[in-house]
Structure formats: C-alpha cells, structure tokens
Image (cartoon, rainbow, N blue to C red):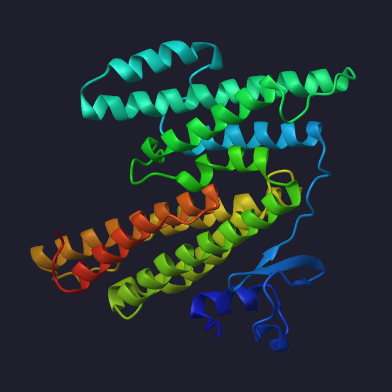
Length: 320
C-alpha cells in the first residue's frame, strides 16, 4: 500500500487530479491529468514522454544528450576529450596520492565516455552510408567496453556541489547504449519519481522545522510552492516548449525563498539572533539541495539524509 505524504498530496492537488486518482493505481499506468498524459511510477504521477523510435541515429542523439548532461551535473575539469584517453589512463595509473588519484579516475572516466561517443558516432555515420555494423563488430565492442569502464570509474565522480557521487546520472549513457530505448525511458521515469521523493523529504523537513515558529511566518507557503515547482521542473524535458513556463517559475520561486528574512523581535539577544541566522542558512541549503535534485532529475540520498540530520540537530538546539 502506498501512503502519500502531505507534499505529494499538494502535488496531486496542483495537477487537478480527481479524488479517485488518489487511489494507488498499477505501476506504469498512464492517465491524462489536466489534458496532459502522465505515467504512475513509485507513488507519483509524472509527465509522460513517448520514447524515440529505436534507431541508431536516435540512440546517438540520446547518448550525446545524456553525456552532455552527465558532465553538466558533475564536478568541473573531468570532461576529458576522447583523444586524450591514453594520457588520462597513464596519469591515473601513475598517481599515488589518494585524493588526486580519485580526480584522475574521474578524468579517465570522462575520457572513456567521450571515446565511447566518438566510436558510436562513427558507427552511426557508417550506418547512414549503408555500412552495417553488427553488435559483434570490433568498433561496437570497443564502444561497449569504454562505456562499461567509465561506468565503473563513475563511482569516483562527484556532483558539482561536491556533496556526493551521482552514479544515477553518470550511468545513463551506458544504459542508453545497452537497453532498448523504451526500457531506458521507463527507467528515467522511476528515477524522476525517486528524485521527487527526496524533494518532498527535504521540503517536509523544512516545513516541520520552521512553520510553527512565529519569526518564520510566511515561509511554509514558499516551501510548498517551491517544492511543487521543483517537481514540475524535474518531470519536464528541456525540449518540451512548456519548459519556458516551468523553469522560470521554478527559478523565481527559489530566489524568493533565498530572499526570505525571518522577523526578529527588537529585543532579541545575541543567542537568538545567531540561532535565527543559522536557521536561514538551513533554509537556503535546503533550497539548493532541492534545486540540485530537480535539475539532475535523480535521487540524492546521501545529501538528503545529511540535510535531514542537520535539521534534527538544529531542532535539538545544536548547530554543529
């Protein structure tokens, strides 16, 4: 039985879902909500996008997009050109310092990803010229090996915030290479649902921590609105024209949340001022985390757990 959180109910209400739609449907069920088709995954109704036709050309477009996305959401400096693969490997294998070796591993993973996409581009170009490349072909095997090694090394790659690894994003180009396109799309819907659950968890934690405090009056609605906008941003593909309404709203609401100022009494002592100031820091940190999750469209369980723990310690009177 699926139990919906208050934040999920807010999402359902914002989408004008009929009361009977609150009953848990079958996993993967599809339904039109406000004239837009949605798919039910892991407790959430998510905007549905039909998969591309499974051709080599479309698969290349998908892999290229996912590779760019992986580099966009990960730490700087690891987008190593595929032609530098041998140099990247040599640097990784010769590095002894553990911290620097991790970064060399991330740079090698980047080179492997780019080499794999270079190879797949060649395969597609040959196909467009009428040259059939079988799955057992040497080029195809090299491409698969590069993707697989990049996936293994991806455990060393961090999100650009430095908070944690982001394997779910890093592994997507390999999955798009090996899985039927329809199955890959289904896996994406599941990841988006998991990301939505983390968004709700962070937002719920912020609400529980601050909504009952008079000094933070007005904050709760800002949190609810931002979490709703974050879920819409997470489920909307960048190629969808709707993104030009969804993304600006999401960013603007985040700016409002960042600008929120608690109302301090005139006679507040230094301890209260410090506690309220740290509370505002927590709110901004929660906003950033929700933004990371919505942008990457995957769960960030380590960062979410760390944030919830910070809020718990704050409510217990400890800021450290």
